[in-house]
Image 1 (cartoon, rainbow, N blue to C red):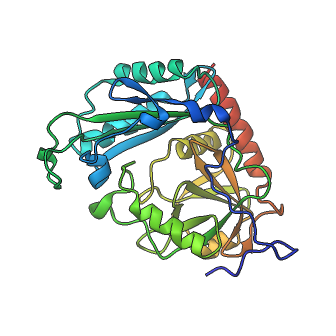
Image 2 (spheres, rainbow, N blue to C red):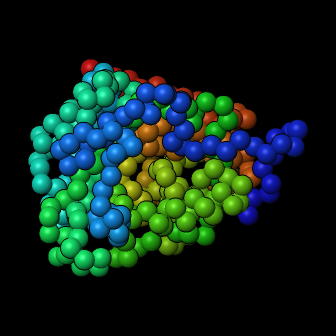
Length: 317
């Protein structure tokens, strides 16, 4: 458990999340895509019999729109379609159909840049309130929420992590590679971290090695090398893979390996990756400061962020 988190004047430290974004009044009048129709935000609803609401039976993707183009669209669709195929969930449309739905939603909201999207697909409405997938007989539910979104998590101090008892489980229990609506494992980890006075939970794998946080993929930097987990127990993050590829392509040593909290506490830098925030510095872990700067981050992260910014610009040009 972390000690009480206070600033030098003994006031409670500001709570942050990796999904912090600047307030934008336009988000109060959004139109939401629900099964092919555009609904005002206050009227966008799904049935209480929906598989996603009732059981968390569905998959989702988070994506960002820049210059009128979805960053790394193909990679996100690869993950979505593979996940749905693995659980026999028929989306009811192909990639072109999904792109059409995304375009419809963006145009309805007048959106072209600095937009975050949550695309959700569930097994649909059930005829009775029970678990069996065969009870979902009317086809999938597809919802698209888009918001004007300028991430702010990287401003000021970095994220504070607390190692939590909730772990990322084995693939035969619930494979973490599924970007599923069933996020209770991560929600519990987030609650444990918050109760420890931190912003997010640092989760271990079943063998005790450092794995991921409850919301993002996790990296450390040691003596110029970038380390991340093997990927066996964490979400196959699109941004995670882009960072690994950028390191390999630009002469930055990068390792996907097992490592412990001992290695983590001694890291020169630590950061998180995710579609919403890109790369977010970590300021401390279990009360121990990380990195050469009080707010977290360092020269290796600076370089990676610059490379990633260029990559996004090229991908969405």
